[in-house]
Length: 153
Image (cartoon, rainbow, N blue to C red):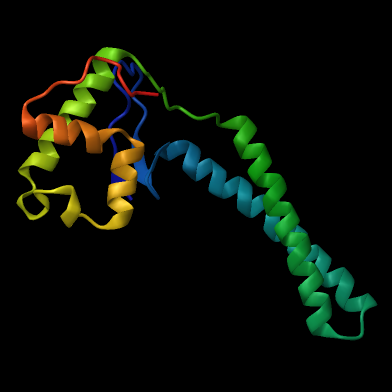
């Protein structure tokens, strides 16, 4: 976990962290963990106690109890999803897109190990092509400029 910056224009004083490449509110993360434990563990323990009395094989009883606990965790996940909606704000305006595109191209230009697209791994080339950065990079190297919004999705 590492601290993360909220989106621009964010007003309140919530603390955000980055977990698995996603930005989350630390208080909501803690509450979600508590809801998950409260939703899954008691259901597992109750199912294990009941099923051990009914079934002859303890391993089978524990397996079914584990499934009951997982069902409790799924229900807790649904509760958390409804209680804590995403905080992300996605914008798609021409000015922001153009600025991000220029920043990505500048970063690619600084990388001396990958001066030509042919030196890039195939996965990176396909991602660049999908984002229309491969053509933009070729245009920026030749000095040509694509019209604003051309080829963007």
